[in-house]
Length: 167
Image 1: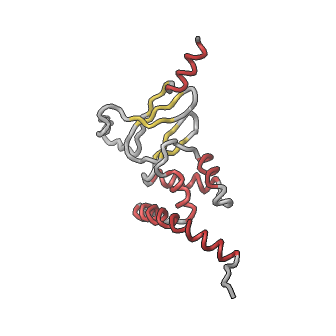
Image 2: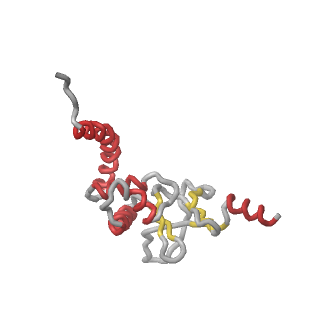
């Protein structure tokens, strides 16, 4: 008699293949969270994994939308709270836009940003000599707890579109 797998065993076998990759990634992210005093819950790992290393500066809505398929019960409030916690612990960065808009930066290392006034995209840029932070003199007794350096203008894509319309 031939030994056949049940559908449940087949699903489990496929899940384990994917789970190994997820496990390795989550183990690395878990260590980073624990090092900063954050409990590595599945939701926090998912949110951190969705932002870490990204260069497109996603919003809460973008992160939530991206995770909804994998975690249908994940609330936007949980995503927001987790992103705030990760930023507070300096695992990710924040880029404040106009009004109340906040975008999240997967690279916490110091760098500047360029925000296009036409399309709203945010680009990472390195000012000359950016291997060191710019020196800022603050009044005695002041303490800096966050820093942002953002340039505003028109990106090359929007500049080309504008020139094309002007011909």
